[in-house]
Image (cartoon, rainbow, N blue to C red; front, side):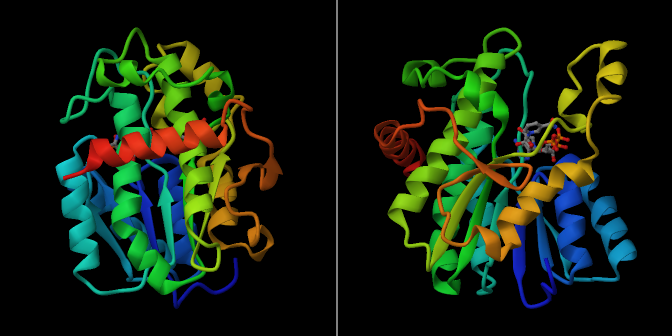
Length: 278
Ligand SMILES: NC(=O)c1ccc[n+]([C@@H]2O[C@H](COP(=O)([O-])OP(=O)(O)OC[C@H]3O[C@@H](n4cnc5c(N)ncnc54)[C@H](OP(=O)(O)O)[C@@H]3O)[C@@H](O)[C@H]2O)c1
């Protein structure tokens, strides 16, 4: 990654798991890192720990609840008010396995947090990214997106069904589609966009899997540091320049689910724009 001391990174869901490992690695190389998270009490000790481990004081908390579009607007406004450049936005936060829930604005919770909140955050920060130039948007998707057959747009306004596996797959397909459409809409000289699967990682995302299955599963998973590798690669490596819109696994380009067509990406963008209009 080299020295990042002149660069600012915005990482969502950075208080734990892959996001925390991503933030720490960026801080280790001197990057200024904003940990955009929904709980100050869960994030403050992480900020302190990263500062202590990296000796980099340019690490801070910013309040962001992706399940509430008003919170997303407040977070973006608070960052923009500082009049600083932004070199990479890493849309990492995500959830799975929540039953029967919706966001503050009534969207299915998994889709609302994993896609819609990040869509609004990105579009609000996009001019800053464009002005900074040669910047990156990294959307942490999943290989679960391969199991989505498309998007039933009516379903997105209903609570999560069952344990939400199909909703998770759709939300992660949305991450891929959003990345592709962003790459079509914005010149790569200004902003490049990437989506990725981080691997099967021993993070808190498996919290809804019951004991004793969960500890056994974790034995076969990679660490959160390994899970951060592809996000860091997409956010900082020169090797991905010229590949805006691509999907990565293990720091290698891979074809995404063929249902990720330009037509579906365009439709998702238009609907997301309408849903997030103030
Ligand atoms: N772990 C895997 O094997 C795996 C595989 C494929 C893809 N992924 C993707 O990797 C990304 C990181 O997941 P992880 O494994 O590191 O999971 P994790 O340990 O559960 O961390 C998820 C992060 O998202 C945050 N988050 C959840 N809801 C939020 C909301 N409404 N607003 C703001 N932040 C919110 C969490 O905050 P709280 O602590 O406050 O809940 C937490 O910081 C996710 O996008 C996930 O879909 C993970």
